[in-house]
Image (tube, rainbow over all chains, first blue to last red; front, side):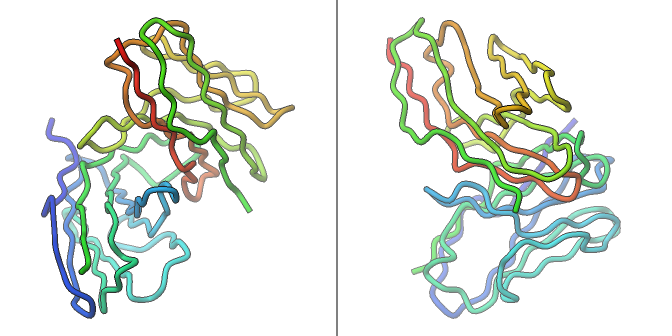
Length: 115
Length: 110
Protein backbone atom coordinates (compact mmCIF):
# COMPACT_ATOMS: atom_id res chain seq x y z
CA UNK A 1 0.00 0.00 0.00
CA UNK A 2 1.48 3.35 -0.99
CA UNK A 3 2.13 5.81 1.80
CA UNK A 4 1.28 9.49 2.00
CA UNK A 5 2.75 11.30 -1.00
CA UNK A 6 3.64 14.98 -0.96
CA UNK A 7 4.77 16.98 -3.96
CA UNK A 8 6.97 18.74 -4.67
CA UNK A 9 9.72 17.70 -2.29
CA UNK A 10 11.48 21.07 -2.45
CA UNK A 11 10.33 24.54 -3.43
CA UNK A 12 12.14 27.86 -3.64
CA UNK A 13 10.02 30.99 -3.92
CA UNK A 14 10.49 34.71 -3.42
CA UNK A 15 8.59 37.02 -1.09
CA UNK A 16 5.16 38.01 -2.36
CA UNK A 17 4.68 34.94 -4.52
CA UNK A 18 2.14 32.23 -3.85
CA UNK A 19 2.64 28.50 -3.66
CA UNK A 20 0.51 25.36 -3.82
CA UNK A 21 1.50 22.11 -2.15
CA UNK A 22 -0.10 18.76 -2.85
CA UNK A 23 -0.81 15.74 -0.67
CA UNK A 24 -2.16 12.33 -1.67
CA UNK A 25 -3.29 10.33 1.37
CA UNK A 26 -3.10 6.59 1.82
CA UNK A 27 -5.78 4.88 -0.20
CA UNK A 28 -9.00 4.71 1.80
CA UNK A 29 -8.03 7.47 4.21
CA UNK A 30 -10.53 10.31 4.28
CA UNK A 31 -8.87 12.77 6.65
CA UNK A 32 -5.92 14.97 5.75
CA UNK A 33 -4.17 17.32 8.17
CA UNK A 34 -1.45 19.85 7.45
CA UNK A 35 1.36 20.93 9.78
CA UNK A 36 4.14 23.49 9.59
CA UNK A 37 7.45 22.28 11.05
CA UNK A 38 10.18 24.74 11.98
CA UNK A 39 13.25 24.33 14.20
CA UNK A 40 12.41 25.30 17.76
CA UNK A 41 8.65 25.45 17.13
CA UNK A 42 8.03 21.81 16.39
CA UNK A 43 4.86 21.01 14.49
CA UNK A 44 2.15 23.62 14.32
CA UNK A 45 -1.31 22.52 13.21
CA UNK A 46 -2.64 24.30 10.14
CA UNK A 47 -5.93 22.61 9.31
CA UNK A 48 -7.75 19.32 8.88
CA UNK A 49 -10.00 18.26 6.02
CA UNK A 50 -12.46 15.41 6.07
CA UNK A 51 -14.85 14.55 3.26
CA UNK A 52 -13.93 17.74 1.39
CA UNK A 53 -14.81 19.96 4.37
CA UNK A 54 -12.45 21.86 6.64
CA UNK A 55 -13.13 20.46 10.10
CA UNK A 56 -10.61 22.31 12.18
CA UNK A 57 -8.18 25.18 11.77
CA UNK A 58 -5.07 26.22 13.63
CA UNK A 59 -3.91 29.70 14.49
CA UNK A 60 -2.50 30.81 11.13
CA UNK A 61 -3.34 33.90 9.04
CA UNK A 62 -5.80 33.76 6.19
CA UNK A 63 -2.91 33.61 3.69
CA UNK A 64 -2.85 29.89 4.47
CA UNK A 65 -5.71 27.99 2.90
CA UNK A 66 -6.46 24.52 1.71
CA UNK A 67 -8.97 22.26 0.09
CA UNK A 68 -9.74 18.60 -0.33
CA UNK A 69 -11.03 16.87 -3.42
CA UNK A 70 -13.51 14.06 -3.75
CA UNK A 71 -10.67 11.51 -4.02
CA UNK A 72 -9.34 12.81 -0.64
CA UNK A 73 -6.29 14.41 -2.20
CA UNK A 74 -5.57 17.77 -0.63
CA UNK A 75 -3.83 20.96 -1.59
CA UNK A 76 -2.52 23.73 0.59
CA UNK A 77 -1.99 27.25 -0.70
CA UNK A 78 0.04 30.07 0.78
CA UNK A 79 -0.39 33.50 -0.78
CA UNK A 80 1.83 36.56 -0.45
CA UNK A 81 4.75 34.56 0.87
CA UNK A 82 6.85 35.95 3.72
CA UNK A 83 10.36 34.98 4.79
CA UNK A 84 8.91 33.44 7.95
CA UNK A 85 6.92 30.97 5.89
CA UNK A 86 10.11 29.03 5.19
CA UNK A 87 9.48 25.63 6.76
CA UNK A 88 8.87 21.96 6.21
CA UNK A 89 5.17 21.43 5.49
CA UNK A 90 3.92 18.02 6.51
CA UNK A 91 0.74 16.32 5.51
CA UNK A 92 -0.80 13.51 7.53
CA UNK A 93 -3.67 11.22 6.69
CA UNK A 94 -5.90 9.05 8.82
CA UNK A 95 -8.76 6.70 8.23
CA UNK A 96 -11.35 8.83 9.96
CA UNK A 97 -11.60 12.22 11.53
CA UNK A 98 -9.04 13.14 14.15
CA UNK A 99 -10.08 11.38 17.30
CA UNK A 100 -8.29 10.60 20.52
CA UNK A 101 -7.29 7.16 19.31
CA UNK A 102 -6.69 7.96 15.65
CA UNK A 103 -3.26 7.22 14.21
CA UNK A 104 -1.67 9.71 11.83
CA UNK A 105 0.42 8.67 8.83
CA UNK A 106 2.82 11.35 7.66
CA UNK A 107 4.34 12.16 4.31
CA UNK A 108 7.98 13.18 3.91
CA UNK A 109 7.02 16.81 3.58
CA UNK A 110 7.62 19.72 1.24
CA UNK A 111 10.57 21.91 2.15
CA UNK A 112 9.66 25.51 1.28
CA UNK A 113 12.32 28.18 1.17
CA UNK A 114 11.26 31.80 0.74
CA UNK A 115 13.99 34.17 -0.42
CA UNK B 1 -4.94 25.67 26.34
CA UNK B 2 -3.77 22.19 25.46
CA UNK B 3 -0.03 21.81 25.01
CA UNK B 4 2.95 19.49 25.24
CA UNK B 5 6.34 20.36 26.71
CA UNK B 6 9.25 18.08 26.09
CA UNK B 7 12.87 18.04 27.07
CA UNK B 8 15.09 20.13 24.87
CA UNK B 9 17.98 18.54 23.08
CA UNK B 10 20.12 17.71 21.44
CA UNK B 11 20.87 14.52 23.34
CA UNK B 12 24.03 12.54 22.59
CA UNK B 13 24.49 9.06 24.03
CA UNK B 14 26.88 6.19 23.59
CA UNK B 15 25.54 2.92 22.22
CA UNK B 16 23.88 0.75 24.91
CA UNK B 17 23.26 3.74 27.21
CA UNK B 18 19.90 4.32 28.93
CA UNK B 19 17.61 6.90 27.36
CA UNK B 20 14.99 9.13 28.97
CA UNK B 21 13.22 11.94 27.14
CA UNK B 22 10.86 13.89 29.38
CA UNK B 23 7.42 14.96 28.26
CA UNK B 24 4.68 16.71 30.22
CA UNK B 25 1.31 17.86 29.01
CA UNK B 26 -1.56 20.19 29.75
CA UNK B 27 -4.99 19.17 28.56
CA UNK B 28 -8.64 19.29 29.47
CA UNK B 29 -10.54 16.07 29.33
CA UNK B 30 -8.89 12.73 28.68
CA UNK B 31 -6.36 12.96 25.86
CA UNK B 32 -4.46 10.15 24.22
CA UNK B 33 -0.68 10.45 24.29
CA UNK B 34 1.80 9.52 21.58
CA UNK B 35 5.47 9.41 20.74
CA UNK B 36 6.38 9.92 17.10
CA UNK B 37 9.85 9.52 15.61
CA UNK B 38 11.31 11.31 12.59
CA UNK B 39 14.34 9.81 10.86
CA UNK B 40 16.47 12.09 8.65
CA UNK B 41 14.69 13.06 5.43
CA UNK B 42 11.46 11.31 6.40
CA UNK B 43 8.07 12.16 7.81
CA UNK B 44 6.99 11.26 11.33
CA UNK B 45 6.15 7.69 12.25
CA UNK B 46 4.14 6.54 15.23
CA UNK B 47 6.44 4.94 17.80
CA UNK B 48 3.97 4.17 20.57
CA UNK B 49 0.78 5.41 22.18
CA UNK B 50 -1.33 5.22 25.34
CA UNK B 51 -4.99 6.07 25.49
CA UNK B 52 -5.75 6.22 29.21
CA UNK B 53 -4.11 6.76 32.58
CA UNK B 54 -1.62 4.09 33.69
CA UNK B 55 -1.47 2.58 30.18
CA UNK B 56 2.02 1.69 29.01
CA UNK B 57 2.86 2.00 25.34
CA UNK B 58 5.81 0.02 24.01
CA UNK B 59 7.52 -0.64 20.69
CA UNK B 60 11.05 -1.52 19.49
CA UNK B 61 12.34 -1.50 23.09
CA UNK B 62 10.91 1.95 23.82
CA UNK B 63 8.35 2.43 26.60
CA UNK B 64 6.26 5.27 27.99
CA UNK B 65 3.64 5.24 30.77
CA UNK B 66 0.67 7.62 30.86
CA UNK B 67 0.88 9.28 34.29
CA UNK B 68 -2.18 11.38 34.97
CA UNK B 69 -1.09 12.42 38.47
CA UNK B 70 2.11 13.99 37.14
CA UNK B 71 0.72 14.77 33.64
CA UNK B 72 3.73 13.07 32.11
CA UNK B 73 4.55 10.59 29.35
CA UNK B 74 8.33 10.13 29.50
CA UNK B 75 10.00 8.01 26.81
CA UNK B 76 12.57 5.41 27.94
CA UNK B 77 14.78 2.78 26.38
CA UNK B 78 17.17 0.58 28.29
CA UNK B 79 19.88 0.26 25.64
CA UNK B 80 20.01 2.59 22.63
CA UNK B 81 21.49 1.71 19.26
CA UNK B 82 23.02 3.86 16.54
CA UNK B 83 19.90 3.24 14.47
CA UNK B 84 17.82 5.04 17.13
CA UNK B 85 19.35 8.37 16.09
CA UNK B 86 16.38 10.53 15.13
CA UNK B 87 14.12 13.33 16.37
CA UNK B 88 11.45 12.27 18.87
CA UNK B 89 8.14 14.11 19.26
CA UNK B 90 5.72 13.81 22.13
CA UNK B 91 2.10 14.51 21.16
CA UNK B 92 -1.40 14.51 22.54
CA UNK B 93 -4.78 14.25 20.90
CA UNK B 94 -7.87 15.75 22.43
CA UNK B 95 -10.16 14.42 19.74
CA UNK B 96 -10.20 17.68 17.79
CA UNK B 97 -6.55 18.03 16.93
CA UNK B 98 -3.07 16.87 17.71
CA UNK B 99 -0.61 18.96 19.72
CA UNK B 100 3.09 18.23 19.27
CA UNK B 101 6.12 19.08 21.35
CA UNK B 102 9.11 20.82 19.80
CA UNK B 103 11.03 17.58 19.30
CA UNK B 104 14.18 16.17 20.89
CA UNK B 105 17.09 15.25 18.66
CA UNK B 106 18.92 12.07 19.69
CA UNK B 107 22.33 11.07 18.38
CA UNK B 108 23.77 7.70 19.38
CA UNK B 109 27.49 7.25 18.86
CA UNK B 110 29.20 3.85 18.54
